[in-house]
Image 1 (spheres, rainbow, N blue to C red):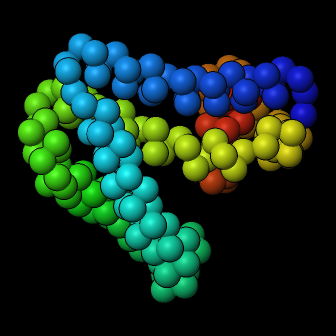
Image 2: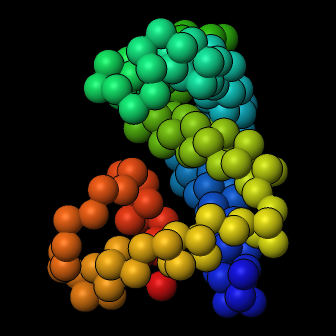
Length: 170
């Protein structure tokens, strides 16, 4: 992996971590929202992941088989339902959350969810070991041509996340 790729990934992680924290500080000062709102929402999102991830990673693939439309539907519905239930329950938890059912409270809770999304991924990423990007570039030159031109040169059967990852690294 090139130094430019490693620098881009490091910059992305800094933005993904520092951005939500800066937003939380601004929201806290601008709307006078207690910092508990931010952390409670983050905690509920992590609880959501504790329910969501085992279903999506272990249960649904064993029931529906890899690559099926049923697996896609079950995964999407599980994520949507679990996240919305977590968001609903977070605003029912404790007096400080009930008192902050305002625009500022909603913004703080949203940023708390955002930090909870980034934290587990950031902790697990080691930019020096990401070989998928280079292998995608080597395996599919048509995909890389499509990314650089912005058009579709040939129909290529690739998973939906591959063009995004490939195009982001150019």
